[in-house]
Length: 511
Image 1 (tube, helix red, strand yellow):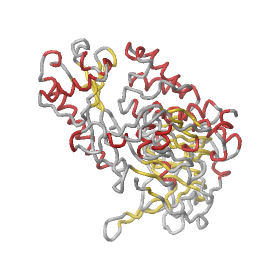
Image 2: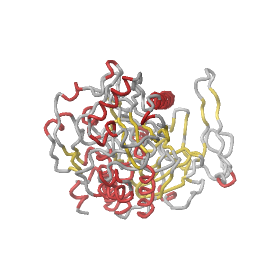
Image 3: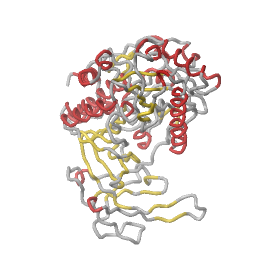
Image 4: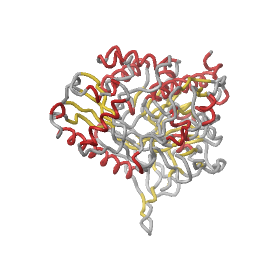
């Protein structure tokens, strides 16, 4: 049983309640008379409720300085941070400061990956105003910044997933057309996703990282905090959808969650992908994944026979178009998705390994002599982060019995896929977790609804489930329909004036 991390109940009564009427306006910046957040070195004070601000020129309680006016971003101004370093030099106590509220919307989607795209498009097309926030410089998450190039478990999906596959195939290469869009060009995906979101009226903010969340006295999520080149900013919304992959928004809001398996929270390895060029597809055809699953074994044997030992023992070389290929042959074990330092070290190791592998293959000469790295992923691929506590918990038993649920948002067909949890024996897959078996199963709407915070939904790999179930539903062909369901539910709940947990999926579909 994996370790469950539960935050203690918040002491809500001692903190002020947000006056939404004063701030729920679409202006770029809201007056400093509303929007001050109490902060400490550990984060938001008390429950993190949004409090009334000191006005222009007024002094905040407990401080001797005045709040600065909002910066002129065009001129490069910033809101400076004040604070004191503790005597033991282990903490910096930050002074309270006014945080600009820069956006209000019906629905705020945190994360612009496959789940976030489904959520944003569904909510906007249902008539909601939608703000989409992502840390990368493009939409698509693992599809684009992560250079995934292959979409799994999408063939039986309708709605937004089917629409995206059709676009990827129509605009893509012969490989994209032959695969019905499941093998795609990341650059085409970037363009398609941007065009669809802009057309739907979604407001997009890239280069922006979520750093906090604010709940009111009733335990309802009311604001998200971000950091970017524009500084620290606050965003208000009626409903929020966590599509961050790692459950960042839900964790900041105070939701309980699970991580990994066992008492040490052991997680699946991360992987960095790359784009290669310089070989003739006919000359290396036996090693291309499109020819069948045996291509992985042949490529591994070729590597090992020539002194190349990849950390992932099922190397995948996929032809995308013209002279461009994708390569996945890296595993980074024991890396926490919440430790930026560890992720940095894993990224450096992974990138070095990719270049070493390409150099080793190039030494073979012949068809491989001009092999070269075109690009490595901007973001290392993370298979596992937090699994947020929802109002239904998908389990290994649900997979074994082929769960049928009356509030199913989609059916997952991908099998149990637990990559080796360590490099002992250099196994590709840990077969131990497959003993219970798996059949196609439903993903219920309540698994997308946060149990501990109102007004919050989840989509993608951070939904509610156990370690084994997660290894199946985490693939991106399931993330998009989950996002689409969450987006529609968020929009309908705003229109009906009720919380998402008060709605039945059939009621949402028929709205």
